[in-house]
Amino acid sequence: SQLILDKTGVEEEKESREVSRVRFLAHSLVALPVVVVGLVGNLLSLVVLKNMKGVMYVYLLGLAVSNLCVLVTAVPALFDISEGFEDGSYTTAFYQAHLMLPMINSFMASSVYIIICMTVNRYISIYRPSQFQRIHTHKNARISIVCSFTGGVLLHVPLCFQNTVVSTCLDTLLISNSTSLPTENTIDATSTNNTTSCVWKSDENFEVSENIVFKAYLVVSEIILRVG
Figure 1 (tube, rainbow, N blue to C red):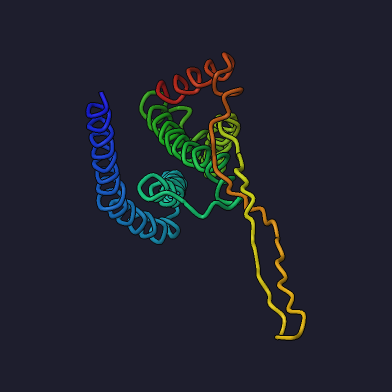
Figure 2: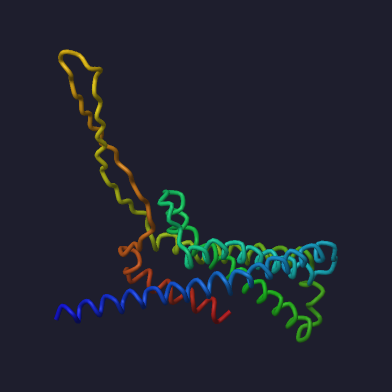
């Protein structure tokens, strides 16, 4: 029985190492270069599109900004998945718990909504040409982009409460010895100090994630995004 348990432990450790290696290859060596290429491409798009005057270029400019935000927020997320933030600070744990996933999902949804606005614009130009000139304006394009970003953020605000920040505090006993100069009565003094070190990390908030309302929200938000 002991031999079987030892073998299982070795296999689990080997499997864990293999999973870690796959994560490193997928998220560091593959995903990060793709993200870097995307960042460069979107930056070049911004340089070109900012000098364009057409209404469709306003949509494309907003799309480039949204895609750029997705890629920027994806960089620390990929690092967290492949390597992991191990500093144990409250700021890092707060970002992991309340900001990382909502930011990425919000900007991704914004990109989808901007593409929907562009599609609707093209549809009206073909099937409702009499109304196209009235709708196809710079003002309406900017309003659509603002609504796309606002809708993406509002749709994913509940994700901020899916995780929570928890702390693990350890008491460390420090002992220091001090010996006085040699005299007739030599005194050995020992002083003790207690120090508390806390490590913060992100953990799932089961009161929220297991709630039926939150589960329904996940289904509705995915339907809204996918149908769009």
